Image (cartoon, rainbow, N blue to C red; front, side, top):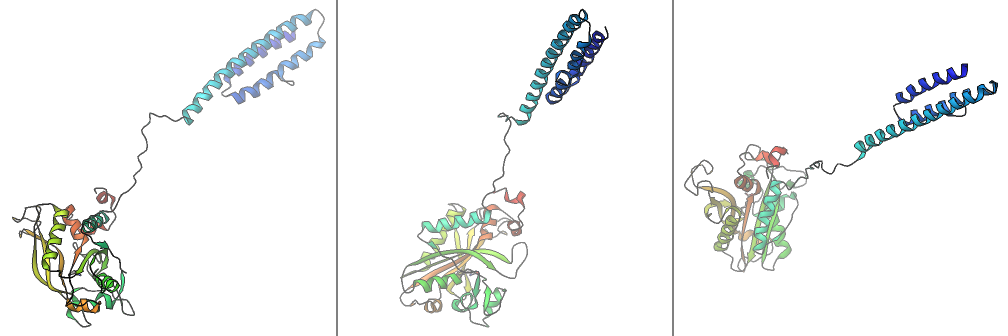
Length: 342
Ligand code: PHE
């Protein structure tokens, strides 16, 4: 009974191989190899034709049993491998809603832009509106129209970046005063502020070749120093706190007369003197004055009819004071460790 022996060997080997299959695809290939038309069991069944009539049913019955056993084993293995594959895939593809999300850093406004917005909002509430002017400016608007003729020593106060053809990177936002007056004259009132970048040849811990200013200008009948002082006091208290005081010290600007440097009382020591205010109790925040008659005339206003005040403040300086930053260059290097604090 050679065929019976072959059947037993096939059964034993096949059961072992079925359990050795690692995935459903390989198992299916093996099933075809075993039970398919050209399969090993099929080959044995075919050769049964050569058996004698009394051998045939014995071998036939055993062959059926072997096929059933193999089919059952294949089915079991397939079920198991299928489950394993499914759970592996679920593990890879599924979304675990209990997992903590990825935090994306969105960024935020630069501290200097925040300060500019704060300054702007304070003046908007006083009825000022925002005016704009070019950073590449003509020498006329940056100097001449502001009562600084050629060869005037005041041009040395602001070491400038000159371009060709009478152009200059504006050294101050004051040219926007002139541009605004030219647009409005002879009408009143004028109330503008103008934030923007200015450029000077200056570079150290408290000076940068590019920095920002906010210019202010008010023109109307009967404007006097009292209006300037009240406006700046309101600003200082809104910006730095209700208990702040300001003081005006006589100064000189070619485009204002009289002119003043304006100090705010030190918030670190409340005016008694400390390191922040260099033991004076006061911190300088801006330059200001009443618009010079020459500037009014030059821009189309009659100084006998109207008067005005103007001021200009450094944005970085205000930001340094408000946020207690000791080196202005922190604002420009883009170090996230610094910027994320705001
Ligand atoms: N433009 C002056 C400066 O940059 C500041 C200023 C503006 C002074 C307006 C008076 C009036 O120093």
